[in-house]
Figure (cartoon, rainbow, N blue to C red):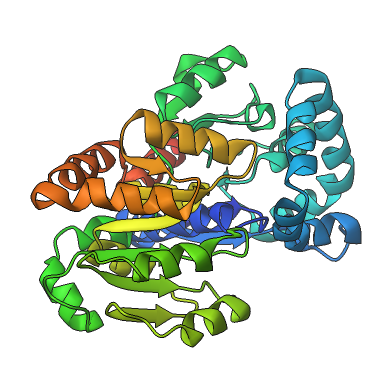
Length: 381
């Protein structure tokens, strides 16, 4: 009997995108590599030996970007050059090297995948110092505006979401054969849902069968969201609303306090966002990497209503440039976009949906799983 291959996926929890990408790869590998792989996800930053300030920086991420966006932007920009990156890499190697060594000793992986950029330097130092023969795959989880810390010439493979990021990787010194353009991995369920009929999903969700559905995914980082949804509800457009509070108690309470004029479904935290996306016609959200990527993979036109300085601005610019959505600066912008998209039998909306679908990479997790499996087989050759 062939021994199972072991794959260690390292991720972080600053925001949801990195872990979601890791989980998508894990699901894809279980699907496409059958019983030949054991896949473990770990976050080294949660180790008790990591300094408390670094460990807690993950949970403080939302607070910082919401209350101090200009400070976040400043920090992001000044660190996005060669010298600061080298300093960062040295610091994280110092903090994480022994933790990584312990993790690898415990898991004995045949392959390592990381969806979080700061782990590369300590991993590469460890692989070199301990003379380990473990391929390292880095999965970039930002669409366009990508920090230099993502790119390290010593990795085995670097998967990138777009041609723009591939160019950045080449500019950073990676060789063409190290780079694989896959898209950002999303839940394989999104790909499977393309086979399901929208009317069946709407019946399951108890939504209106015919009305255009506007999905609103809330976040504590969107300051004017209640004003936006109230403005939409006061409009005379024929539509229905699906509102997701995302586990935010205050937002959920505010949603429930409104006497809605349109058919409206309210959700707290859900683990079936792909189903909601498949059943919807439009999404209102911030420009985060995960929600944008999942929306594109679902072929869902985006109304972006909040952009975080740094990588999220790149996401928004990418969406607007490719006419897969718009950036709305005010509730009035949202209404004007709805008017444009819904008139003439939804002609413009259908065009934007087609553009979104062309940009989306619903099979990215499968492609990364296949690439990882290739590397495992090469290791045996």
